[in-house]
Image (cartoon, rainbow, N blue to C red):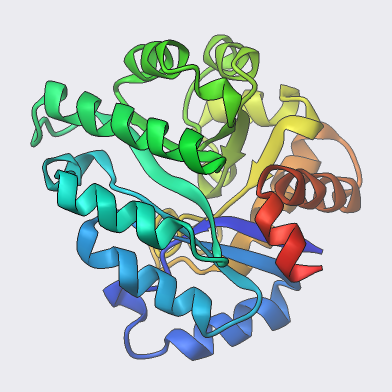
Length: 261
């Protein structure tokens, strides 16, 4: 059995057939559970509503760096209140993103730091977003002692050196559809080398669909293609990847274990 540790099922791309996609993902992908992840304040309730409707979907609540300017005292209080709900298992996706430069770096960093502190108060793991900001993300995680709660570096797109730094902090590596892209050389090397007990599988649906669906709408059931490709790269049976990564997810997101098993 597999799990998708990162999806956005409340995204508008699923608006007309959300229930069908969820049903198909559990049936054809044989998933144990799905983590549904928010990015903005308007998504907090929408993300949680999807989880509340299905016993095998859980919520990850937080503010993506693109929405860092939304992290006011009022918004943070709302996040803290909602994050104490039973179906909320982590804080995320949070971090730094310098790719488009649409939010000042200092604003992103402050939002990142206060959400790490919230996660520590609540005893919840972190789901980390990093784009063109890897070393700054590491610096913040170290200075805020984020290892106390741990988490996963979502959509890992770095090299072996970065992987080792992430692992040294006690964080897991999240791999998705990119690992199936033939030209994603560094990520494919990481997929072959990362310790299996530090690996989580994800889709980031509806984005970053794996081959053979690249360029189309992604969905949680496609995590099977991620598992198959990683098994191929490592030269092992796919059942080993399935079993270990699912156990890793239950271990990290302990509230899922309490509620799903």
